[in-house]
Length: 420
Ligand code: PLP
Image (cartoon, rainbow, N blue to C red; front, side, top):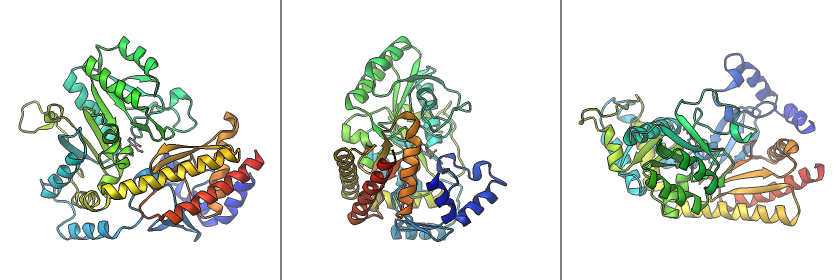
């Protein structure tokens, strides 16, 4: 309570802006995931790795817009690509070489993608990938996993009682079978019982919103084998994990799914989604054949998105740069876990590379409070993480920034530990 009181008194303009926003927006925003108790900070400006709120506080941004903000808030190469594209027109409403260029770059990166199509969000990409897989296999059931998140209308939190995500009566109505993540025997029981009806298995190689829990290699390999055995399409949702190497987690693990969905950063900071896969599935979208799946979207090939995405892939998301950022993330997670353990602090880090989550290990009833306290204390030291614990690095951070952050997290965790 004291943390919330001090937060309220330090942020009067955000409190006022929130009050006004709720006059027209239920919850004050169009993104439930960015809500913060007791009210969210209103951010006025971002530059490099920093955010400035309407009350003038500056924070180093360790949310990075839930992984999409890998470039930081400003990037000179992306800025100039956008300006050049803008000079040639906002929206052309036609085929363009910038669209086929970005497609060629992404196909070259992902072992599973022979052909690709663009959309405006990861959610859309997943809906389209499932649709294609079901049409291709002629079956109707879709295997998904507890705590999986594939977009705002495609989340599967409710079964495990996660404290965010709520219930989803509005889920897009595919015929789901929900299996336990990282549990081969438990999943096999469900999949085996319905093997004739399953057309798609959709899985994140690491649960993202579900807590940054890496998929075990054995589990993901089992899904690969099983999907082939039962004639289903295996879809890897790499909307987040694509940044773990130049070819996503599938490249690191050497597992080739039938389809892959992408999103977030590949639009260079603009709204983006993509789905791709092997030629026989993706050819169903070929407008030259009769009975092709019709797939539209006014902004699917926005020239600004295509240009920003291409420069990002070619010049920023290089093998070396991604390896460095992911190593920094591994170092951060290991350093924090060592400190939490040696000092018996009630926190634990999970994740891979630059995508991480801090969890509170107090009793179930106290976990949300423990995390919220850590969040408020870090804000007090000028660091912004997601209130639910997500910590994601961006290219705008230096090793020194991350070292400063690690020290701040340890200091704040000690303060929370004393209160627990
Ligand atoms: N899939 C995963 C793994 C995600 O993390 C997200 C978003 O966080 C999505 C899909 C949905 O992407 P979007 O928010 O662009 O619809």
